[in-house]
Length: 201
Image 1 (cartoon, rainbow, N blue to C red):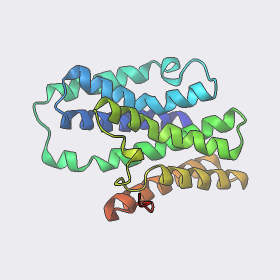
Image 2: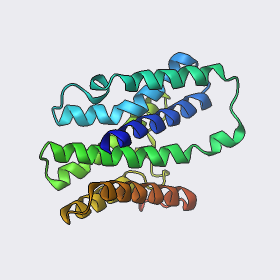
Image 3: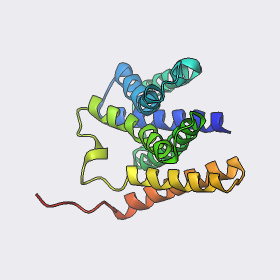
Image 4: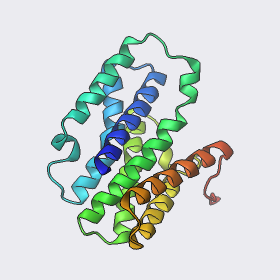
């Protein structure tokens, strides 16, 4: 189940990165670079922090191949339908949920405390997007006061997963519930522009 979640996280985050790069008018190299960063950036940081070797995308070397193939297909398309760009929030939210839970589970396997596991989940789910934004010469949306709830959704979902984990609920239900909560919270935040309170300078 966890391997499937990780694979889906890689694909959805790769699609998000490709759509982001297409909006910037990038070529194949740019598409692959941004997709690679969004797919593997957060998980790489997690593995480095947890001292896991080899890195997850090196151990499962078919992941970069999948992203490369997606980038090639996207580069061959002269244009994308307008409605496809409007779907950008969906791979964003789904990738956040999938990677957050994959990161939390990986941290638990390394005998981390629940709080550290939740932080690893947030890092895994969000920092690929941070690196992608930097590559696109943008202020990372994670750190912008204008961005609807992002890391907060991941943090809440990770803790819901951790609490269910303590009650010996089947792991499949824990993972699906945690992912669903994160995706729902992120989409709600985007729909109604829900943000953390902004401190006035």
